[in-house]
Image 1 (cartoon, rainbow, N blue to C red):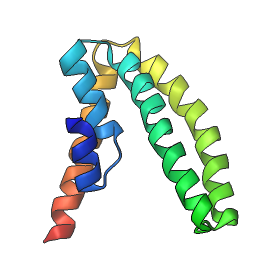
Image 2: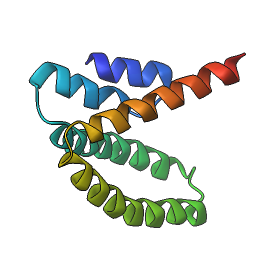
Image 3: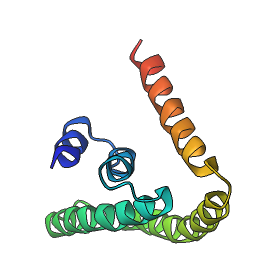
Length: 111
């Protein structure tokens, strides 16, 4: 509930909140938390996509490019995450670094 409220309020991807929340609250490994987060985000995205489709507010050419890129990129990302998960802490450090970079960029843009 808290993650959903923060995602809706800030308008950010749920993965940046769901993954750390799952790790902290359930102590599950980061690779499992990422997979669980992706399923949850897919459910949120599907319901939102259906709403936008019903209202006719979709540029289908652009949407198709995002869908193809997402499918291809997800396989590369999955393989990379699995490889990094075998190295002690590498995936956690990388994930933390990405969050730090995004936060730094947002702070820089706000000034």
